[in-house]
Image: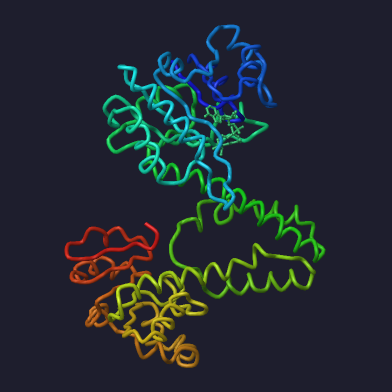
Length: 438
Ligand SMILES: NC(=O)c1ccc[n+]([C@@H]2O[C@H](COP(=O)([O-])OP(=O)(O)OC[C@H]3O[C@@H](n4cnc5c(N)ncnc54)[C@H](O)[C@@H]3O)[C@@H](O)[C@H]2O)c1
């Protein structure tokens, strides 16, 4: 395929050379004449292992060339990669100037070309860019409609500087954001020689996943560094503890605990975070990152309370009271905290949780309930129907298997706030459905 690459910095230079090595022809475009000159001489514009040899080979084979003329680059190619910088603006938000400039150049150049063209966004851009900025900019400047003469793909880059060439041939995944109904045949063809899993998702999902990746890497590093310093202050070789921590591939290095939703709680997590923070204080280690964990969890509860309050002070039924499903453990349950917030705001509230109900009946945690949350006990309903009786808003935290099947039929006429991502609750006739983060 013939591909123009706009922006030959760390990402674009690697893409250009590697695309050529996959068998494509590449025209590199940059505002920096110096970078293009280096490429013309078979040299790399950046320091990166293996890159210079690939560039030299591409140039020698006349399959990698450069131009500063965007119109000529578009005319000579059928696909354009956009890999210009998206640095931080003064307020921390992303500066999209270079991206917009390149998209306008591509759009204008496409208006003078009859053949179809595809644009592949490799720069890291905020969720919503494809639909609210990139495609409208291309449509405005080209005079064409998306899908009629041009196609736009979001294709986040996951390479790491230093091992970028290796990462290009073996990325963790190839991720394509595409419009509905587009099977991404063009990107599939581009990456034919790359063996990684290939995922086609809506634009915003792809754009969002790239942010998640980098933010999560930063979170992992901040966690490791801060927790490591706290352990070291207590005589632990933190590298050894981290090695053992990483041995757990079921709960630690795994998708576990990475499903976004409602706040955490229970008898261990909040307690042990607090206790670890106390160790930080004892050891004289600043722990601003871990110190933000419990406030972040509290903000989650406040957010859900706000979502409920936005509908006015209507009667609420809350499904789930224990800190998670399948247990009667109410210690530090975020549902208890949510219930208390609603009660404090004067909401009429009924609560159903079959596990808690059962434990209450057989007396296992009756003492705890009576001592710690008597004000909540009064609100517990014996059946889902009883909880729903006067409710206008239904907050579904968790429901056990035996109630899951019967719940949807009871919901019409109500607002449902789903904190658990229960698929049966979606698209119910007569139900105003709202997900916590979907
Ligand atoms: N560096 C990485 O490891 C990495 C990894 C994944 C994603 N990304 C993302 O990829 C994008 C590019 O990052 P980078 O590190 O390669 O940036 P960079 O600053 O090294 O390169 C950007 C290039 O774009 C050029 N440019 C700017 N405006 C232009 C224009 N109008 N026309 C043509 N060229 C233009 C610049 O001269 C420069 O050569 C960013 O969005 C970044 O967040 C970077």
